[in-house]
Structure formats: C-alpha cells, structure tokens
View 1 (tube, one colour):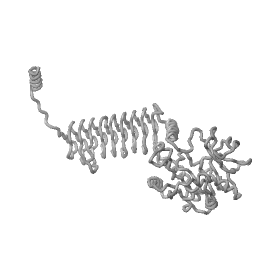
View 2 (cartoon, one colour):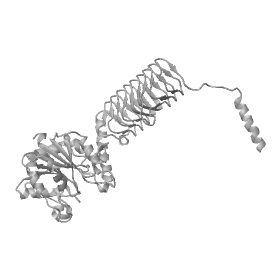
View 3 (cartoon, one colour):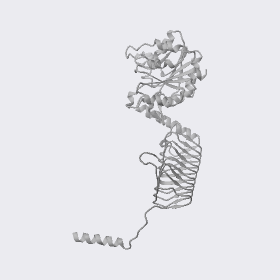
View 4 (cartoon, one colour):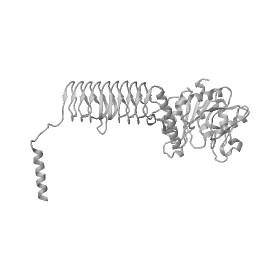
Length: 453
C-alpha cells in the first residue's frame, strides 16, 4: 500500500496532569525534541498522504509546532476532553472514507518507529479491519489486555479493572496504537458509546465493534525491552531521556567517536558527528549541531545550533550558541562564548572572549578578554574582523565596525571606527608616570596614622 492511501491521526490533546506542568505534555522534550516531534518524525517517515494532529482548544503552540513539520501535517481541535474515541472522531472530517489505512497514535509515543507503523499498515491492508499494537511485559498491571482467540485473532481489549483473573494473566498489553481500515472507520467510530462509569468515549471499544460487524481484528507485537510506551509523568520523562541518551551514545561510539565518559555527554536526536572526533566529559549537545571529522570537544562545553568543521578544537568551558560556524582547524578555547559568529579556518579565540554577530577571518587571533559590543539596547550590529588580524587582549570592538585584513588592535583598546588593512589601532589613554609618587603616598598615610594613634 502506498503512503498516499494512509492517514495518520495523532492524539495530542491530553493535558498530562501528572506532569504537573503548564506546558502541554507533548511539548516536553526528550533528547532535544518535543515528544510530539518524535512521533511526527516517525509518522512522516512512512510518507502518509496526511497527518492530522488533534489538539486541545488552548493549544495554539502545539498546533503551530505540528504544522511546522510540513504541509502534510494538519490540525483539528477536540473541544472537550472526552476520551480517545472522541478525539479520533474530531479528526474524521480530514480522513478520507475511501479504501486505505488510518493509523491512530498518541502524541507522547516517543519510541514509535516507522517500521512498526509500516508493519501495521500492511497487516491492515491485507484484510484486518483493526490492527492493535501490543507489547509483552512481565508486569502487565494497569495495562489493558489484548484478548485473542485460539487462532490468534484479536477479540477485544479489556481494561485492568474489568479483567477476570484469567484475563489478568495475559501479558500481551495494549499500547494504544491502532491501524484501522478507512472504509470502516467512520461507521465504527459512530458506533462508539460513552463508558458507563467515566462517560468518556474510548477507542479501545473499537475491536469489539469490528467483531460485532463480522470484521477481522489482529495484533502486532512490539519488543519493548526497557522502553516506555508513553510518557505520563516526570519520572517517565526521565526514563525516556535516559534510554534515548544510551542509544545515542552507543550509536556514536560505533561510528568512530571517542567518548571519554559516555554517561556524562548528552546528545540530541539530530546531532551529527563525523569520524575520529574526541569528546571529553560533561559536554552538552543541544539541537542542530553538526561536527566534522578530527574535531576535539573538550570538557564542560555547551553547543547549540552550530557547525564545526574538520580539525577544529573547542573548549574546555566553551559555549557556542546558534548561528556559530567554526571553520577548519580553528580554535575556540576556554570560557569563550560565540553567537551568530563565523569563525573562519585557522582562526584562534583562545580564552575569555565574547564574539557575537561577527566574522573572524581566517588565521586571525583574538586576545583574551576581547568583546564584540554588538547590542545598543535596541538592535544588534555586525563586527567584521579580517583575515590575519590580531586583536590584543582586553579590547572592545563597538559594532558596527570593520577590522581590516592583517590589522593590529593594541591591547586595551575601545575600537569605535573602522581600521584599515595592515594598520595598527590603539585607543587607550597615554601612560603617565610620576617618579617617587608611591613612596610619598605611603609616607603621607603612615604619618597620618601615627598622629591618630
């Protein structure tokens, strides 16, 4: 079955009260990406014709984030929190009724993989009206059980509270993910009735409705290992983060990256690292970081939205902020912060420096304590430092300003005007010396103290 015949419904309207947060649950991050982002990444990978994300009435941020994933991602609103069946019903106006498959997934299912969705889609396309993704666990308590017939067909989903003693022994549990034949979806959703206890409408009643219509239902088993199915609490969030980090560390170690202390290094799902890269302890990679080959990242560095090219060195204690490019063989040393800075090949910024909204030309050298003064309280301004320029320690470059190729800036200067190529600019006050002043000063204070005593 082609992707065009597939519609994905992502249920993301839940408030996640157990998270104890004003932020919608699906916007909490794991490995540098919101939970919803992990789900949208997996679902987009199967190239569906449309992805419909169901959000709550006050979730404009969730809707905007979902739409940022592409034109194929649409949103709809579940106006009242009335269960998973009602949430799915909210999306039906955007789900075609002609033959195809509708995949229903939860917005917090960060570990969902495209391969699993493809398997479910194919099973549904081959005759199952409803396919439920299950998982085996040694501790099924609190999970809904998947009750199957002798031939393996799914008969119904029974919740823990309603399960008999025999049903409670079933270890195949409901993950909540379903594949449903689109030609039956609209009518079966219409048949869902409110739960007599909660009054909510549950999607878990769908297999029973399909059975009553004489339709076939089946399951697909998921090997979860230490994976969490969904994220409902801060504890689940921490567990999910730990699992993602373990997988990412193993991936980079296998690809030729040296991690001196793997458990102290934190990656994002979109981190890209080349070969023969060395990463020292306590380094944090935030989103959108690209590292070339033969790069060294020293300890306690923090990187976000940066590209570091082959042979460069960063840190220790460096903070590279979004928009930073570190050129081939360049050096960013300790206690250096950069933002929207293009550090060209071979340039050196060794210590105690802020470079923002700037270009540092090839082979330029920036002395300790240098600051690009880029903000006037209202707007940011650009500093252009030419190739081979030398900026002495404790200099302030007041943007907008240009330092020409090969120019020298004397230590302690405050540069407010452009400096031409190969020139020397010095703006500090002239040094004055008064011979014997120190001795005179001390004698005066000693005599004053003796008189007081």
